[in-house]
Length: 137
Image 1 (spheres, rainbow, N blue to C red):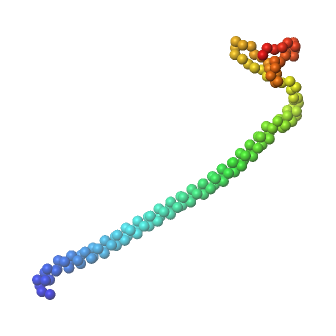
Image 2: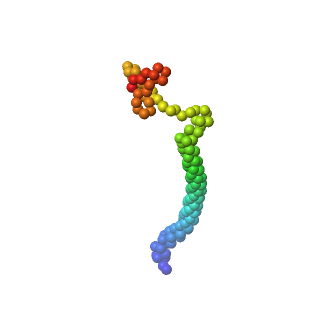
Image 3: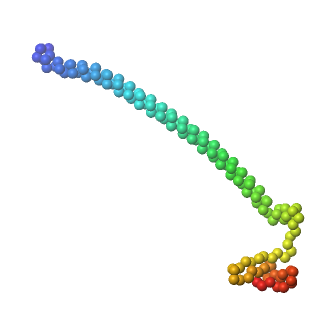
C-alpha cells in the first residue's frame, strides 16, 4: 500500500476501530438494560400472579360462604313456613288456653262522618250480643 492510499484509508480504519470498541460498550449497556427490563417484567408478572391467586382464593371462600348462607336461609324459611301453618298455630293457641271463635265478627271502620259497623264472617250484619239489636252495616 502506498502512503497515499494509507492516508485515504486511515480515517476510516480509525473510525472503524473506534466504532467497534464503542459498539461493544453500547452492546454491553444494551444487554444490561435489556436484562434489567426483562427481570423487572418477570418480577411484575410474578407479583400480579400472586395477587390474582390470592383473589381467586378469596372468591372461592366467599362463594362457599354464600352457598352456606343460602342453605341456612332455606332452612330458616322452612321453619317459618312450618311455624305459620294453620294446624301449628291452632295447637299453639290451644296450649295458651285460647278457643276457636264460633262466629267471628269484623269491625269495619269508615270515615269520621259515617258510623262504624260490625260484620259477621259470613257477610251478613251482626247483632249486638248484649242488647240483641241488629247493628247497621
